[in-house]
Image (cartoon, rainbow, N blue to C red; front, top):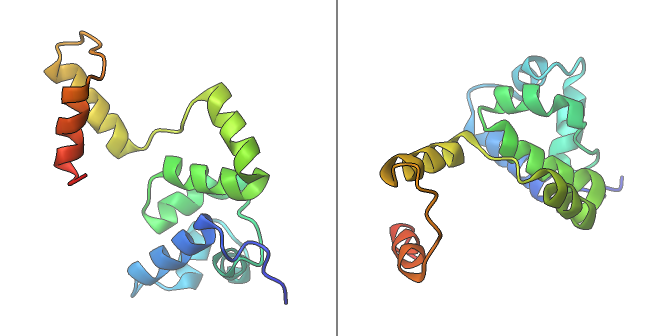
Length: 131
């Protein structure tokens, strides 16, 4: 059986999250995501099937992950990286809850002055992440 999506970041992510959520079963995750058949989740995980975009919110909840992250991965899988980049260029990058918290902290620390990124601030930020 061909698995046209097995090497996508989404398939790898779903597979990893399912393993990380043990003892929660794949059938439980599929049920929480609203899939009537747990096989659908198995097919997404293995790369045999694409992730239905309308299931992103419920699957994100079932996988205990941020829906914006899952949407970015699903868009890339669904329409390809060129089209996904065009969608992001038009609508902006879906921002995760963690990223929103960083933005709020920057706004608070800067007293809402909308600071530009400078070489110094970029270096400091990268230093936080060991880059």
